[in-house]
Amino acid sequence: MDLRLLRYFVAVAEERNFTTAARRLHVSQPALSQQIKLLERGLDAELLDRSTQPLRLTPAGSEMLVGAYRLLRCVEDVDRTVRATTSGQAGVLRIGTTWGGLYDMLLPAMRALRADRPDIQLPVTQLGGRDQLAALRRDEIDVMLHRHTHKDSFDGIERTVLFDDPMIAILPLGHPAGRSGRVRLADLADERFVMIGRQVKPLVFDRCVQLCHQAGFEPDVVAEVLEPMALALAVASEGVVSLSGAGMANRYPGLDYLLVDPVVGIAEVSAVWLPTCRNALLEPFLAALDPSMYLFDDAP
Image (cartoon, rainbow, N blue to C red; front, side, top):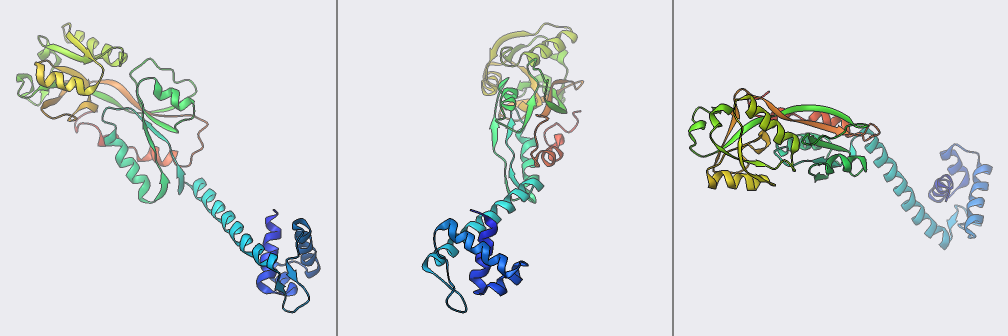
């Protein structure tokens, strides 16, 4: 149905006079009369009783006026929503994230966006491993907080590195190596290690082993686990130690989480998105990300 004809009809129905309605619409009276007749022919219904002055609505015209108001309100709502979405004041930004402490950086960014954009929606999906970039390429998410743990290809993907996740040692409470508040890798040379398995995080696993080699020893990895909770339970109950990124810090009680001295990164954390993304909320979201909400105070 032609919205212009609906607006013409509403003006005539409210003014009950073609001349007054034409003046309100800034059109000629004969042209307005022709347009209303065109609407009536299209509906095969007489909408106005022209035998009286002021004009009266027929029963069909009364129903038409109710429907016209409803349709025009819908059009106005759509127009308002589209404009708000285009300006970033409304809309949906689909965020993906990996486990491992990024909550501490993601939550403040989401709060900052919602502070002056109360109508936006920020659904978050937690993804692991290579599912992250695959979901992005399938257009299931708009932006991803990605920890580089696999030899992933970033071809066709925009990426900005937020920080390099610093290595921490995870020790049982009271472990002698943790008394200074920092720990050197060489101090752990005689320890037994439990690690997140290489099949889960190959780049992180290899980086930890490489750094141990640089510190002069081969780590005695007695177990590889699949989940952070299993790692924390093993350290707390079995007298082993572990190496991880700072995302594990303080996630589980009953353990000491210490930066390794000297501080060294083991996994880049990036925001990634497709270059075709035109979501007006993307740039404000990237600007709101503050890595300092995540890192140890003295980490790089």
